[in-house]
Structures are given as structure tokens and as C-alpha cells.
Image (cartoon, rainbow, N blue to C red; front, side, top):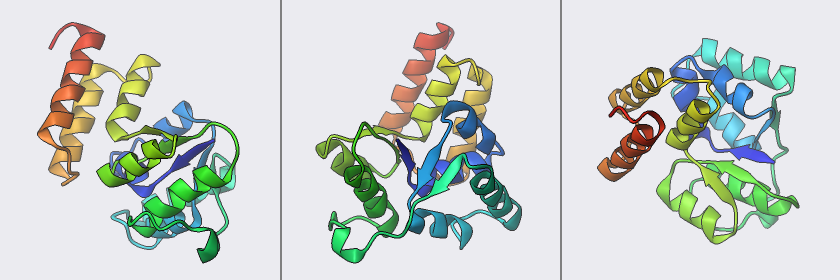
Length: 169
């Protein structure tokens, strides 16, 4: 099961590449709280909210029911990250959590959940020939200019990985 926190969704929808997520992952599960964050004011406009709702109607975005407080583990994270990790832990089987926040990534890994951040999704799109290197670099530039926090080490590792794909950097 693929579960997402809000930041990867916001990153792709703001770059007008939301459908790329559908091309990579046939179904993405959004915890109720994450869906609410997205449609009630997380840096997306009304057109983008409509795009999210159309994905829900089409069935490739599945909104999970709100978890009872008693089922939520206190990971000392935001509500969206906490609920995303809890959804992964509540369902049997392998999971992939789309998440960018460093502390949330660490908690997910500590609980045996595979993780993939926005830059990892971009790299996956390159390996599946859904995105070329130039477009990947445009996406990185957009993220940085839009205020998306990426440490210099994360950016460096991303650039090195692009170099491995292309041999040109």
C-alpha cells in the first residue's frame, strides 16, 4: 500500500505534475487528516484542490477514514505525519510512505516502513522514463524557489544520483 503525507502531493501539484504520481503509483492512500490539510489550506489553490478531488473521484487517490485518537501513536510529529505512519502500521503488508519531513522519515524507518521523498519520486520517474533529467532539474529548482526545505546534503546526493543516470553532470 502506498500512503502519502501532504508534502509530496503539494510539491507535484504546484509544479502541475500531479498526474505523474498516478503514472508511478496506481493508488495512493491519503489519511483523512492529510486530505483535510490539502483541501483546506496547505499551499494549494482552488484549481489544485479540484484536481485532488477529481483524483479521489477517479479512485487513484483513496482517502482513509479518520483514525480514532486511541489508535494514534504519539510520535511527536504533526497530525498528518502521525496519521500517515499509523495508517501504515494498522494495515498488514508492505507499505511505502511518501514523506519528506526528516523526523517523520526517521520514525517511519524505525517502524519498518519503506519511505520515499519528493526527490526520490523524481528519481523513480526518471528510471521509469516518465521524466527526463532536464525536467528533473526544473522540478528541483521549482522546489527550492518555492521555499521547499532541502538540505544541501540532500540536494548534493540528488545531483550525484542524476549524474549516475546520465553520466553528464
